[in-house]
Image (cartoon, rainbow, N blue to C red):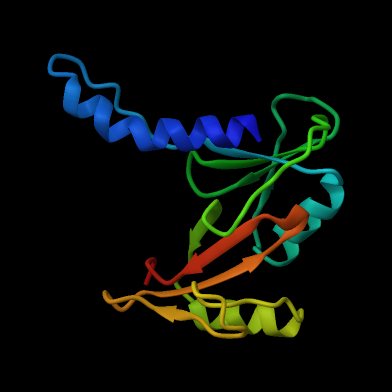
Length: 152
């Protein structure tokens, strides 16, 4: 949870840091997101089966940790070795984009995974003012996910 909070703060401050720094740019980019889980294998199965993420080599070599690719140079780390409770809500979510939003909705329906639009209307998705579709659902450990159609 601490890593998720630190990650959120760093991402939020990136623009501020650039605005204040005039001679050197830190050029932050996303490297990975780490999530605390109680059952790393159950979480990994969800990532592989529902999100269709590719599992990659866990270069930390720590037991109880599994890594997945989020695209070139970006990773999702599932960590089951930290035993503190995790608290989250819908505003704290991982957003993924897909070029086939409708196919993803079919995956959720086939697996009977409840989803909603942002206000929480069951089995509905948003269409933002810019035409992008969004759906929200909870995966492993109660973590919230958004999948959107930005990647058209």
